[in-house]
Image 1 (cartoon, one colour):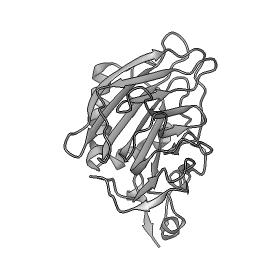
Image 2: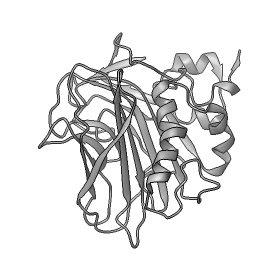
Image 3: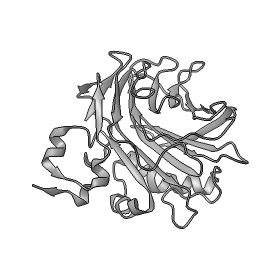
Image 4: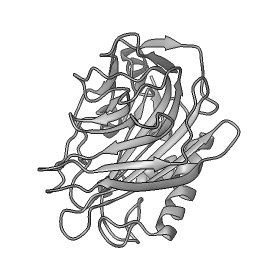
Length: 275
């Protein structure tokens, strides 16, 4: 399903239950990926957000670029893309990878951008405002706005969006493997692109792998696959999956479908049992 956002500035879709593996936390890694179809590119409008501070926005200076804000005790970090070249009236696949570390490094961000004709490619990311103070975590995740009470709704359609978050576990254990907390090497970024970013772009994520990793503190929330009471009533779902249903505020259904989508009950479809 696709929803249209921006009819009102408060439009959003927010998870009903807090993520049990928090985002923007020290020694944690987060990947957010999905499809957006902007009809207007207005600076500060939000693609997605976590809590009141963490957000990916339309950059105010160059509205075809992306700016990510993190949540830190003193000064939020800011990360800016170059080469995203987002345009209106077209579907764009955007994947953002964030690695947080409180001590010796500022953290790290990687961004991949694609559309229906071009698979996701990594774009340049700079850190114009270095964070000051520790990362502050949250369990909330909002599509199309800056938290559940935000008033900077995305303007256009949003297809499916997935968030994955896990603690930094080292190369062997982690589904989002980085060796040093808060640092993402080129090889690690390429591995994550091949394992998650490209399959998500194609609509064929590794569902079995995700199920096996839940016990390792790997959390996936997918919107809008677990969004409606009707869907939940038709299926028996594992507790982990059912925790992350979303509530939709203001956004309306759209027939403008993205170029690809995982099955609507990703990430847990192999465990669904029809009543």
